Image: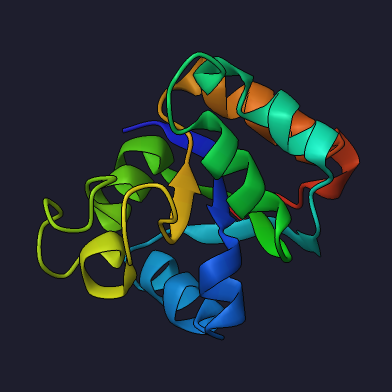
Length: 143
């Protein structure tokens, strides 16, 4: 196994529903550690830039609007195979197709306005982490 960092975002709906602690608890109880975290409100420009990969998709405008409507919590999660582990904990993007016990199944509302985001590959994780955090912001906690 490989020690990795991955980006995790608790999205506006979950922040508004006050379930941040439940979500972080699921990551921590699965062996991931929070190495950096901050709450912020994305500007239109930041959301458009972060989700630029989806610019041509029909849900892009709705996703950008959702991500800018209220604060989000961005985190760097650390652990063995953190990227794959985080994605397994989150579950399928569509809450109705997610496995019971995953964050998106248990706490998600719908595909576009889902509860969490997580990086999908090492290269994506590095770019996404750099979008929100400077290297000095990350506090490695591996043992």
